[in-house]
Image (tube, rainbow, N blue to C red; front, side, top):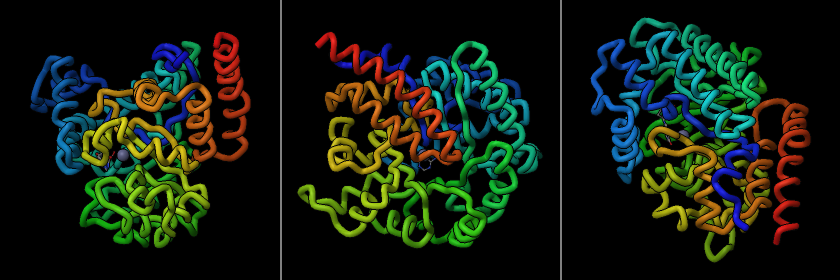
Length: 360
Ligand SMILES: O=c1[nH]cnc2c1ncn2[C@H]1C[C@H](O)[C@@H](CO)O1
Ligand SMILES: [Zn+2]
């Protein structure tokens, strides 16, 4: 008996790669845009949602990223950032996510006069509010914030320092994102070296729209703890035989933040069934499943897992493995990760696995 959509929604899930500005509710985009006079391609929420998924279905990361002008554009005040963050916490919790790391780029939210600290504080307060409301509704969720620097820009050191400044207030890591080709991770080496000296954590978007050199730099030059996507590591695997870089990534248990639907939209994979996640799981890489941008992909953690169940025939054991992998790879302290694994995730999946065994 394959896990059903509704069962997957109720099972606890952990999410490491989700963009705050890629997960707004369409109705919220419409309302916030009306408040500030931002022009949208559609003003009916359902139509706007469809516009986002269709426009993001472009086969190129660069064109996919163009759609963010309409989300970032309406996230320029403290109240808008607070609302979007609170709704993000509520939506993830309603989807059964018990732990999430949500990222955004503070430097993109300054056009109406906010300062970088004001941006971060508004988002942290929104996550706190949304999480508190979710807990009251019986859906507890823990959210860690990642601050992203845009790889084409030149503010990574400033954003790295901002991340460290807010490390005890909810910021658990750092990232770089944006167009990959032409903007190698080593452009930001000073920021990564600073973060290492500060004993801080970071992931790097690498191996999504560009291949092995990007992954190699992210790990061997910059010292990334995890790979955002990293899906092109398959370019170093032939007939299940691993090249030096792929072997290093697997041996060191470097987590891959795989985002199946997003990869199909940007052309990194031809379809879900063709997505390298099947091979990478078989070869026991530290694979995690993620949403990337729920609005642009019209997706959720439940939907990503359901798509994998459908395409690869996965059952509860595999879904638990992805979830525990994500929790093991999270940037919060070890004891807190262990508590979520042992007290929340494993007991819930044990019941689901038992039930399937009895009925089959
Ligand atoms: O999948 C992605 N690859 C590279 N950059 C991305 C991806 N998804 C979102 N972004 C960019 C666009 C957002 O404005 C920014 C910060 O969340 O990160
Ligand atoms: Zn991403």
